[in-house]
Image 1 (cartoon, one colour):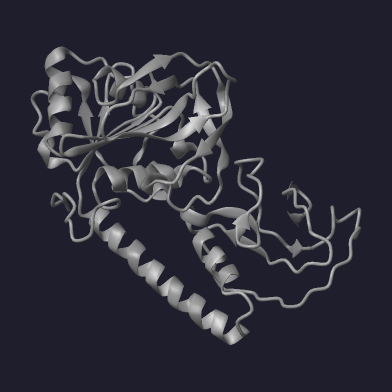
Image 2 (cartoon, rainbow, N blue to C red; image 1 turned 120 degrees about the vertical axis):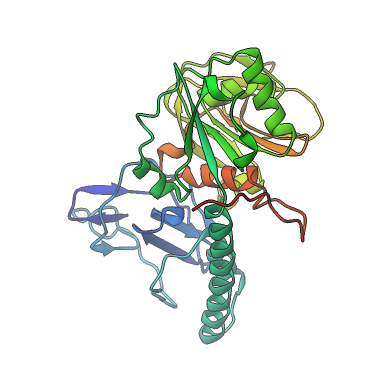
Length: 344
């Protein structure tokens, strides 16, 4: 258990093997959105999933083998080594630390320091490429930007996109944008010329990231191939995660994902289309319902979310990864330059 000022608690269920050594890692971060909040790992893997998405105060105390400040200790264990780092480790860094095994502590620390240096360099390169790209955000009659002020992009770590009205797609030079974002809401009301402009933009190399209603719009515009069904869930839903550049950094296989009545999709078997997140709903003979579909369409890329990855600290990295992937900054063959457009 971990607590601060007795106001909030978060527990993960751990099962400890008897008479065996285990590595336990606790990370806490409030400044870096990529690793924000409290995370707990055993033997290099995050255990369970967060039970709440609200902010948790910085802890004043960490106890191992203790339910709460009032209940006190209920277990005994031998502690071989305690290390405190001056930064929060990512999930892959925690795993690398565990895989260093029984190496002497100075050797493990040196190896971890080099790993952090490499990871920081990769993130800096991605950030530079992203902020030298121009993004657009499409809005319209049913897709408001009220929930997307400029301040909303700070924790998402993406450039502030240029608003484009749904009626202006045909008249706009869309090729100037590396990625077009379509947020949640009722989806876009596209005329055939505007729908064709959007489809042409992607086929010619543009990126598209749709959230909830934006995912519905991707389906209606022919950017993804799937059967679509209404799903009235409101809140958080269980999903299963598959490895992909969009899910990079998530070591969990299951997660609670913010949801607001987004659709259930049954993806069709078409070239270069993949389901990377699936809903944990229904049982056979019901099909597997897709939550997130990615597709390479022509020279462009599409990511369609049924839920709202931007709505929680635990999932917003999926949104930024989606923008990076759609912009071809990640998920590229070696030595393949991404599409960039000069901006500020």
